[in-house]
Length: 223
Image (cartoon, rainbow, N blue to C red):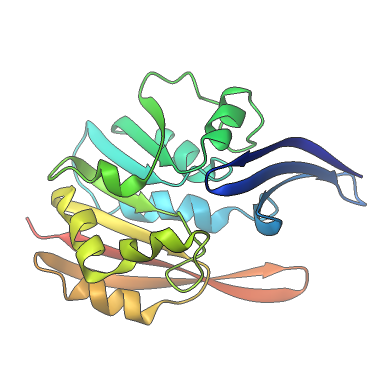
């Protein structure tokens, strides 16, 4: 059984939220953008790892974190559950997703009323204020080679990545989620002024009998 929870046509196309029940009785939430499957919550380990891997590389408390892309809320929820996090700004291009989060329809995010959390509709690049965050976590596409919106291409250019890293305080981390290993992105990040400890974590995930290799690309800003 498949039930439509919401559908909105906006300036960036149509966004739809669905809930389906599997044969074994499990409930799955799906996000569809312009008729194309974007994500579901069958397997959310890599979205959560985007938060845990980045924050594990940062020392200190009272951390400020920028999350680019709300999705179904799993990355944001993981950030909020991490000790030492004092502020979480989530920037999501599709304002319908923010509305669905407030309505309690996103399975990953049940703490919308957390005073540390701010949800903003817009382009995440507009939030790249210099030295503003301890961590910047980007999951706005399926990776630099599979864009949800073509307008995001500039985010993965050397200039766009430099702005993202510049929004990270010295010693902080910029992390990018990708649906595939992204060696070009890794090389671009490693070449940025002030970038150190660039690395790519390849995370194999089994879905429906197939193994997919997702990736996290991380870099630290030098102290």
